[in-house]
Length: 260
Image (cartoon, one colour):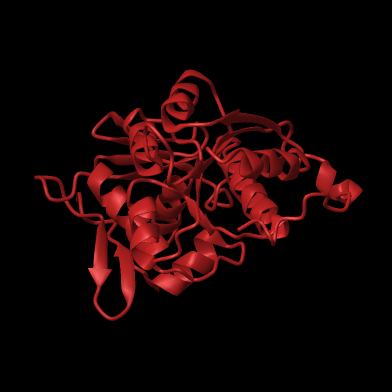
């Protein structure tokens, strides 16, 4: 399993060792000690401060009691599984990016991880370069969002209003009928992208390229899972209007007139 992870990797280039957005804190929840040690070694080169939890209960306690910029979460954990940990983190309103890590490679496992709120998915065995590239991308996107420089920052308006839905980019805050929406970084990016292009239909591949934008492996269920979570948070299926519509044979579009 560890063949593609070198025990003594070459030193990272100086540019890679410089944090793009300041110091990062990463929580690794992994029960295999050798894998956890390698993850600490590689992620520290970002650079980042890395904390290790050896089981799901400990990892969840840390995730809910401290602030982290990224969680690397193994799917199969003792005491409390990775899916349950991810679900509880999201249920608590934490929007920290979550990278799911597992030896499983079946489509159903990926679907489950994404459905409960994971932002990305890396299968074992993985390369150190891919791991760090994906971790940097999640850290960079989360930092940009917190700084109010997300995908629609080029627009002149600081806030967008669609009926009861308001997107306040200056404060990185979305509200629906005055109630805060706890959006994960990727959910925020996706909703802002839709709001920037009301009425336009985008395929899943286009959304992966335009919103994820870091050479994602093209796994289209990533988009489906985030759309489903957005729809739930926007109250679809209740008495509220539907903002995100499925365009059959194409993808999705945002209806800015839904609440008119």
